[in-house]
Structures are given as C-alpha cells and as structure tokens.
Length: 282
Image (cartoon, rainbow, N blue to C red):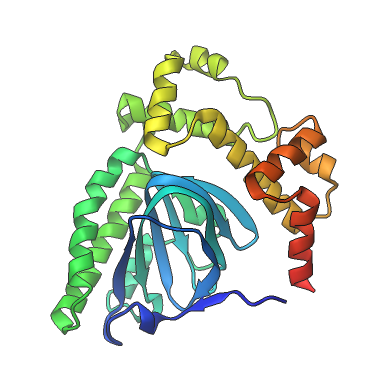
C-alpha cells in the first residue's frame, strides 16, 4: 500500500510550548495526499478546488469550514485561486482543553459533522481574530501561548455561534445562497433546473447566478458538476458499483457522457481512476 506524505508538528509550531498556530495560504497549490500529527481547522476564504478527505472527495469554495483530525488523509487538486486560513492545534495539549472541547466536533464525529459552510459575509468577522492569532502564535513565551489559546477559543465559539444561528437571521442575499446550496446538494442524482428553483423561491435567476459566481468563482452548473463528480470519485473508491450505476447515482443518464466529463476533469477514465486506488490497496 502506498504511504501518503506525513507532516510533523515540529515543522509548524515554533516551540514545544506552543499549542496553536496559523498557516495562511493565499495561493494554495495542488497538494498530495498527506496526514499529520496535529489537528487543523481549514477555512476556505476564496476560490475553489477539489478536496480529497479519507475516502471522500468534495468541491470546496468560499465559506467552507473543515475540522481535520490527526491522521486524516487529505489533499487538494484542481485548485482555482484557492485561498485558505489553516489553524493548526494540538488538541491533547491545550491548556484550555476542557473549555475548547465544548466547541469542537467530537474526535469520533463523522465527516458531515466536521464539514459545513458559513456564508462568505461571515468571513469578515473571522479575519481580524485570525490575524491576531497568527501574530500571537509566533511568540514562544507563556503569556503569548495562553493568549493564543484564548483567541483560538474565541474563534471556535464564534464558528459554533455562526453554525447555530437561525437561518432567518441571515441577510436576503446570503439566505438565497443558503437555499441554493441546499438544493444543489439534494440534486446529485436528480435534474436541477435553476429557473424552476428561482420561481419557487421568488428569486431573480440572473442576479442569483451573478451572486453565486462572485462568491465561489464558479457557475452554478460548474459547481453542481464538480459536486456530482466528487461523489462519483468516492463511489469509485469505496464500492464495486458498475460505471453505469455510479453515473446514474450521480445524475448522469448516459454513462458514456459521464465518462467523457469525468476524463475531462481528472485526465483519466472512471475505470482508470478506480484501478489506481485498487492498486494502492494491494
């Protein structure tokens, strides 16, 4: 079995005393599958890409939040102007562990409990806090370590509050995006018609399309296609379903067309993609 790249805490934390640090990636490049001996919160600030996470693949874009555990295998590909704020932390060594734990997903939480999204407008609330944490976490005196953890606690509380905030409290534009993302995520195996969606929700389709493109860097159709292909990648890696069954599960009536779209994105056919991961398991 092929070993993935391993990252170590001593290469990111400036001393053994420090328990939190920030790694900003203004131009995240494709990065191979890897794991590490620390935990991480990934905040997607802008752009988009494909995110491999254990046996799953997700399209990520502005506002996505991911809680990565130690030894999770993950990596990036097909990135497009992807900007990330990565907050690294040593979960078992935090001085404020008992309090911080209340605002983090459980270690045993499933993927869908550790991957969610906030409306991009909320990123402006997080930015000053992350900037202050980035500065403080590069100091190795005890006061700065404690302040870094206090700032980290503020960050995880704020993220939790945003997640729990009533949907009705969202501004009109961001509420429209929230409705659209929900509809897209529920349309993997079924056709999605933007005009019908907008008519049902009393939204102007052209203004929604412009809003979606400005926030994600993708068209609505492009995002849905990536989402469907990500699900197909996961099924190819984790099931023995036929190519035609996977195509149908991911919204493609024609398996030949599905294969053509898949190859255009990944530079390999679905069968070649599956074989590559089967070889790694042997």
